[in-house]
Amino acid sequence: MSFSASVAPSSRPATVRPPPAGVALAPLRSTRILDQLRERIRLLHYSKRTEEAYVQWCRAFIRFHGVRHPAEMGGPEVEAYLTWLTNERQVSVSTHKQALSALLFLFSKVLQADLPWMAEMARPRIQRRLPVVLSQDEVAAVLRGLQGEHLLLAQVLYGTGMRLFEGLQLRVKDVDFSHQTIVVRSGKGGKDRLLMLPQRLVLALRKQLARDHALWQQDQNAGQSGVEMPDALEREHPHAGASWPWFWVFPQATHSTDPRSGIVRRHHLYDQTFQRAFKRAVHAAGIPKPATPHTLRHAFATHLLQAGYDIRTVQELLGHADVATTMIYTHVLKIGGGGVRSPIDSIALT
Image 1 (cartoon, rainbow, N blue to C red):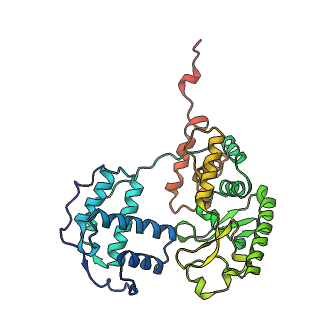
Image 2 (image 1 turned 135 degrees about the vertical axis):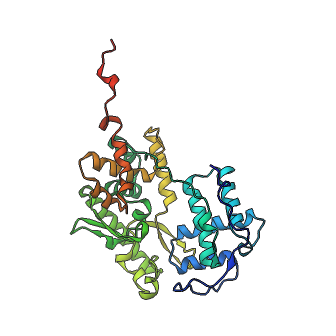
Image 3 (image 1 turned 90 degrees about the vertical axis):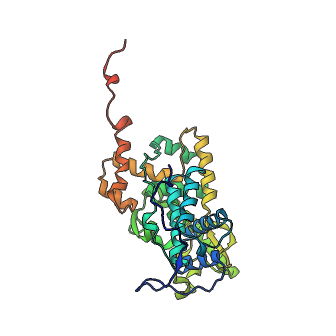
């Protein structure tokens, strides 16, 4: 897919100007452009993942154009880079969109530049693809290949439909045994939502929290700095991060250095560690599908629909803003055992 055929944007470099009326952006203290990018991202409370991705794309964009400063560039340079990504690197539509978002943030939020060419920039169309879905037997086979915290985390993901980062960032206070619910805080889009607490996981979660409490007490005795707090809560409640309710449900066994603050404290379980364990379990189960931890979320939604739950209920549990996003799982049900019967199955071949 080529983007070079789009309407040619202005050839002038981005013009640095004050922010539009009513939009107040705090002045930046950093002098280097990528440091300014990080500073603005943190001031606007974007996630660490977004920061890492945006810095990566903007650094690659600058290097692509011979280490020129972005203030000297504009629409043609952005389009040339995106066209190269698409034609030479053959990136996916979602990757292209992420790179474009990073550059848009750089020019609009960091350089506060005029972007008349952005409206003329061609954008790829999103192509909805059927998700990879495991059957219940396949899910069970994968679970049998996991152990300890990895097993419980996978069971929580499949049992509630959480995204991986939502499960990793669960706090002790978010598991409510009395109301049989789990609260997802600041999920995708910054939204909170309530999920069921699977009865089968109650005992395992209680045992997990008992192990967590021992780790938390160990940190308390050692005078450790507690755990990371979201957004401004670190400043508003400086001691809350060391409290038991804010401790991770799935903590890392060792301490690590926070890349933003430089503070040594206990992080939650690393996503890469779990992803590798999950991949090994899929391979050991002999499942020839490109299944990832996110596949458990797809299986959760599909199996609920197969059980007769309505699409709106599934939408709410998944946290989808648009029911059209949830509708993709109904297409999965239209094929295979739950869909249309092939005519060849109705004739006698012998």
